[in-house]
Length: 322
Ligand code: ADP
Ligand code: MG
Image 1 (cartoon, protein in one colour):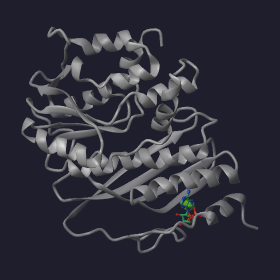
Image 2 (image 1 turned 180 degrees about the horizontal axis):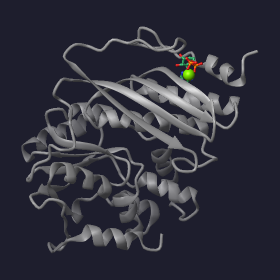
Image 3 (image 1 turned 180 degrees about the vertical axis):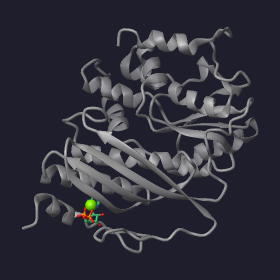
Image 4 (image 1 turned 90 degrees about the horizontal axis):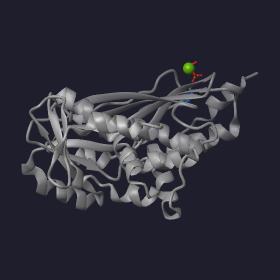
């Protein structure tokens, strides 16, 4: 008699596009191309920590794939293969079906073959490992930023965090913004095309999962740089329109997280090319400041031209009363 979990495993029969042997054997088989480096990353989502217990399983599936693929995008690489390990409290057919559809749909959207995994009983947790490829030597790491480089952010950070606040009933979003914020939260779009377009342009890059400032801190640490950020350039308008509260909009954009946008540095000589990439991908790319020599420090250039060493102070202030 097959166990419930064996029955679940047998349902995983997803087609592959560039794989020699997919789900069903002890291992999968695929070939990597010559002159390419293989990139690997893994990310785990735990119920209650990374998603709410009542989250729709399709969305959880999409997000489990998306946050993994986002790491590959952040290296400038092409995502190719993914494996998925699931711990489930019970063999819940409907949940697994919807989850798998969401996971598969995201994989398909970004050209990734789902080639294996593991399924076991336990508190609900999902772990995926994604494998990608990049021409040797072209990966965009966190440590390549240089003083004088511009700092850029893709898309609209802040909306996903506002969506979560709304679901937790901490705030009420403007009705026009409920859907965009919830879509940003539930269906993050890994910036795969952007990452690849920025090869040989971005000097350092990472994806924003923990808030723009926190992740900027990682880039600065690795690149041994400081940064100056221009208040007037930060794209506050959309989060402000969504929640109507300037301090909250600021906090969500700068420290909220779950955005999966790309934060990158690039020489000012590349401004025109970056504008062209933005136009061709129909994706806003916003220059928010620049890298400086003073390792670890972040300075704000305020709209009236004064400067403030704002981040540490600002961050504490914004997290007060949370
Ligand atoms: P084993 O006993 O060798 O670990 P399993 O019974 O766990 O094999 O898995 C059988 C097949 O089903 C393998 O090819 C495995 O990759 C696949 N599989 C199991 N769970 C998943 C999952 N969550 N996603 C994709 N494939 C899975
Ligand atoms: Mg197994």
